Length: 253
Image 1 (cartoon, rainbow, N blue to C red):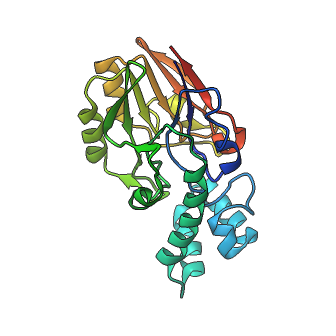
Image 2: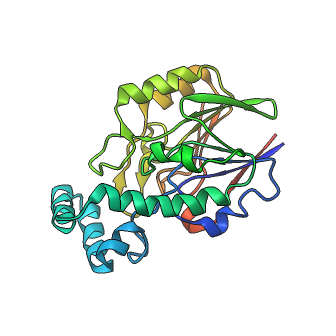
Image 3: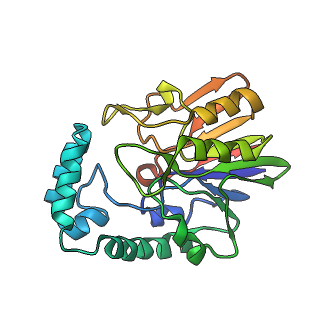
């Protein structure tokens, strides 16, 4: 049995169309939407609306952790515009293309920049959406936890630590623990390019110690200090920044 796993797709529909080739199933760990490309400031919803120059300034402020100034810049640009309507319209265009690129079967959960309320409109019969839920694939039990924890970035699908922990607890015993964000381990949470820690989940780390799954798979941190780490019997793996690599991570058993 072989599954391919992707995360942080961020608009890369071209490579997503072939990500399932040679696999029995595709797993997607979220962040389909491309709001702003930190490597190419001309790509994404934000530069489409406000231009690459403003996108570059926003990236500079966020990278410097000057979040209040970044929010002030955004507020000035959005003034007089219907922000919700503009973002939803742009996200819908991306979702239409990305969900059409998923092979069957695909098992997917949300990332922190996704909008869960829109997914039912685009997930076809071959796509199973899971969040705080389990599914059996090839005799192994996979548990999925979507979204991210609250942060200064204020992305669309950030929830409280308590709500996130409840979803992790609801999974029970699993062989493979799948999430968008990593467990709360410094080496797995630190992004070496912007030089900052992303938020990881203590609840995921506790579940790894308690349940001892074979694998814990995640994304979210695009350029992590450590891509893999063993915690007890569990192999923790950042499956990669699919938007830039275009390559899925493979799991065989």
